[in-house]
Length: 212
Image (cartoon, rainbow, N blue to C red; front, side):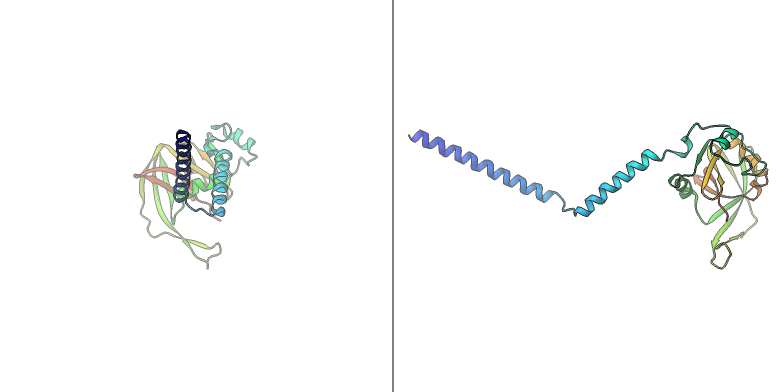
């Protein structure tokens, strides 16, 4: 009889000990977990979903369709006027985008108050004149261009420099580096304003500036 009572007491003590362990574990977990409002959780989930959607629906602009492609095939595929740059036609087209997220990805790397005119371009060497793009509400289009100095600088273009030209106000197409010389000599190229992206004095992106 005593043995049975002792066994019962032992089982009861074990049960109480397990219950206490469960209570302590739950308390620790509750303290460790941050008290995140339900609205914040929903916002995080929505952001994650949006990010995943953009990453799957917005491919890099240089990898859309079958690039590179000939100029004729490009103009026909995208229903673009072959005379978009006057008489000048690229030897090939390396990329195209009219998607807002792609356009922003390119433009955000190049936008700034300093713009450049490319005075001359030859054998991947460009001579440029810097100007200032100044917002001015008194001007018809809300800005003015100041040219503080006629002085020029010389830069080297790399083989992998991305050169993007405007189509209208919200589309860009990429041309080969070898086409830059002829474009700068063209009617449109002589008056084009450019944005530069530079890394360690090397130009990585040349992006044409839209001028209203």
